[in-house]
Each structure stands twice: as structure tokens, then as C-alpha cells.
Image (cartoon, protein in one colour):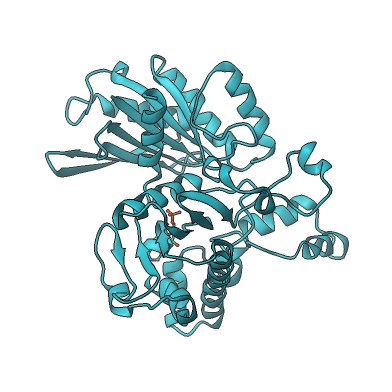
Length: 399
Ligand code: AMP
């Protein structure tokens, strides 16, 4: 079965094609800078163990033009991977927010689309882009089953004591204001990978997703029991451009005393805070370089970033009544030697014994960076949200 996965963002589309049940993508790619005059498409095909990579300049292109080009490449005479676009039986879409209704992979119907539109209110920065991806895919692959997989879904197991806010009941029952949690596709994938790698399904796991957005989740026997992002994806860890946890009094102070509008504060906390606000860049590679050159702001930003993660590990070890595994994933988690070191050092009281040599040795796949006798295993697990979405779509169609 050919399942095409689309992860549509406001200015980018990531995609992968799987011939399920095989878990190796037959092709994958990225359309970047959508909305500019300089849209680029990077397309990769793996055939007979070899990877062919091509970059195409698309000029000015929207989501539809970008996906149309991808569609052409799928059947391209030179490096096409299917005969006809009707060979795509299902298209899986990443949708960030499923609200209180969507806790499972869901076939997209007209009624589901109406419900998805209502969710724009809950995730105005993310859900419209996912919706655009759905509308475009329906045009390009009209014969395929369209399926939405929600980033919030993995957190449907949170207990009320973790997902409720301490505000009057009516705001939950009447307005659906609660913790939803995000990055669930990634955290769910990490939970599955850790269980398979250690051959245990009873793990107390702390999964740390550190990409441009960052979140940390406490997972007990494969079920999410607490998570750092909340009603929206702003709370918790310090991120590329988002502040993470902040005392709400600051927001009122900015509005009442500094004269900011709510939109300005929203923009500030989502787009100009986090590592960008602290150190002038949201790319950890730039910040590390600046730190090496003696930049005090960069050093403080790194310390704050790692310290916030450390605090959450402590909290989640308490929530789980112990911890067997701490797993790092995503762009920063998989690549940043410094962050992992700053987080994991001086954690002996928790049973984490960190191996700095293993930490700085690069290799592909899952690897351990704790000492052999560490009570808690520290793992780097590369995430693969597209594969997790493909697996969930396959599971839905074959249930
Ligand atoms: P993601 O959202 O998972 O694609 O992660 C994106 C982030 O990963 C970027 O903003 C960078 O900060 C970070 N990143 C990517 N490669 C590296 C690297 N080699 N070292 C440190 N950080 C990296």
C-alpha cells in the first residue's frame, strides 16, 4: 500500500512516500520558503540502497504549486517511484491540534473538515497550514483516502489532575480550556522505539523533543501522563523563538504598564523570545559558536535552556515515581552535544550516570549516552514523525 505523508506548515511542506508495511521511505522531500519568490523543492529518492537528491527552484509558488511539482516527480520518467498518481491509496496529514474531539487518526470527510476549521481558533498559527495541505492533496490525489493524524492525540491519556488548569470548572466544560499537549506523534514514536530497543513495555520514560519547538513528556508504560506544552504550544521548555513557561503576570504588566497590545505580546512570546530573544538566533549552532567566542548572552541562553529541561526531568521523575529512560530527540536533541551534557551532568541523585565520550561520538540510529552501570538509561533516538503517521494510517485502514 502506497501511503503519502504530508506535513504542511505555513511556509513549508515535508513529505514522504512509504510502500507499507515497509518502513523505509521510497522518496521524501521538502518544499521551503512558500510565500516567497524563491521557493525551493528538495526531492530525494532511494533506489537500490542509493540516494538521488535533486533541488528545484520553483520561483513564486504556493502550497498547491509546490505539491503539484512533487506529484510530477512521483511519476517522473527519470526517477519516479510510482506509475500513476492513482497508485497512492492513502494520504496521511499531520494536523497539530485535534481539540477535545480528535484523539485518533481520522478519515477526512466533509464533516471532519468543518470540525477541523473550528479548531483554527485553538491553533491559529498551525492548523490552517495543515488544512491547506488537506485541501491541496484532495485535488491532487482525489482517489486516495485522506487521513488526519493529530499531534495532540498521544496525550489523550493524561489524567485530569495533569490536564486541568486550576481555574473555575466552566472554562473547561464550557470552553474546552485544558492542557492538550503537542509533539505527540514524535513522543509516541520515541516511546515505541525505546520499548522495542530495550525490549520492555513497562518503561517509565521521559521523552525530550528539542527541535525549533521543544516539549518534554512523562510516559508510563507507553502512555503519556504529563507533558510540558499546554493549551497551546507555548508553555514548558525554552524553544527556538518561544519563551516556554512564563509568569502570566508579565503579560498583564506588558499590556497595562508598557502599552503593548495582546497581539504584540503574543508575537513577542511566540516569535521573538526563547533562544532568539536571549541570544539573537534560534539556531543552536550559531549560539554555540557565539558561546565559544565568549558571548555572555549565548552562554546564559544555553544555561537557561538546559536548566529548564533539568527541572522538568526532576518533576517528571516525581510524577512517574521513578525513571528508567531519558530520551533525547529532534534537531537539537539528536545533534547538540552541549545541551545533552549540560542537562545530564550532576543528575547522579536521580540515577543518571552520563558518559561524555559516548555523548560526543556520532553514529546513526538509537544510541546510549549513559554509562554501562547507569541506573537510568540515557538514549538518543532519532524521531520520525512521518513514519509514525504512516504507521497510524496503515493501522486505521487495516483495523
Ligand atoms: P527540528 O525542528 O527538529 O527540525 O530542529 C531544528 C533545530 O535543530 C534548528 O533550529 C537547530 O537549532 C537544531 N539543529 C540542527 N542541527 C543541529 C546541530 N548539528 N547542532 C545543534 N543544533 C542543531
